[in-house]
Image 1 (cartoon, protein in one colour):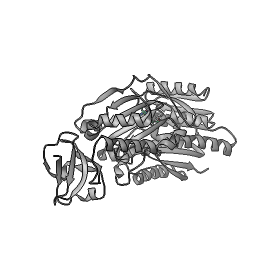
Image 2 (cartoon, rainbow, N blue to C red):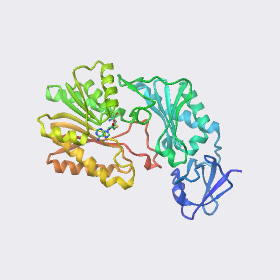
Image 3 (cartoon, rainbow, N blue to C red):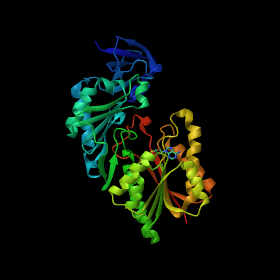
Image 4 (cartoon, helix red, strand yellow):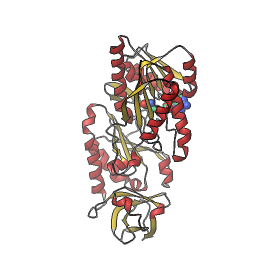
Length: 402
Ligand code: SAH
């Protein structure tokens, strides 16, 4: 017999709206003795069936819903069908890049399961008890649907700890990955370190915005009748820097605190024959922007893509100050007519708040700026409309009026 979670009165409301998370505080009692990751029926206080979910004893997210359809049976075939559907939805993106997110957890109705593809290498993260319990079925289906035999596991995120799961990294299927895997995005070649890189190795989510930077550099060149200059802060392995150079920037200054990331970035530039354009500077961006401000140099194109400043709601105020600080100092370095892309990947900072923070920086900079676009993650990182928590990456494209 399957276990059951019976909710407190009123706590069924979010599930009736198909929100996939059941918090520990919503649970009145557990019937049966479900194991970690086991499928349970979630029921309202009056006994009404609500969802099939994976049970996570001890976790704040006590259960994550697989399905809101009572006739569904959660088994390997059901899991496999969801994986295949997710992979099929990304097929049109293959023309753009061979670095793609194939499965994006809650957004693909597979809570806690992340799968990225780099060339023929798959990298997975199992971040929930349910994903862990269905590990073999998920990997079997993924290998079959993608046609890639090699799977590397990077289940090393904090999310996993919160679920009471130990960190796990290593080869899950097939062979050891190469130390550097080359991918091609919009014709640019980039090396990815799937073992030691951030996330699963690369910021796949910024693909569209990298293409935008390339187009903006090209447009600036046309407008100004000369090749633009660009500044890329928090450059990691140089994605935006390469894009700016590919768009025709004559000089690209890229800043990051990590020597390792900068080395890979320089290697990436060489892979694309971009010589004499890049300067890779190891520095703290907060300090570097102040130093640059005191100098003469101004930039036609600036990208600010910092790490997550707000890990949770507790850090929102401090994070807001940090986003404002870098945006303000970047605006002071932006040439009249220039473009600034400023991003936040903090889920705790919503789109509206971020826009307010950026607007505050514009006011303090004493310049006129137009907002040309709101930016987000690419189509392989969709947002499930019933799960707004999935929204994290947001950005604004500003143009400083001359
Ligand atoms: N824009 C990148 C991703 C940025 S990830 C891309 O598109 O691929 C954030 C980067 O910020 C990391 O490489 C990290 O090393 C760097 N970083 C974090 N804090 C920093 C700081 N205070 N100054 C400079 N770099 C920093």
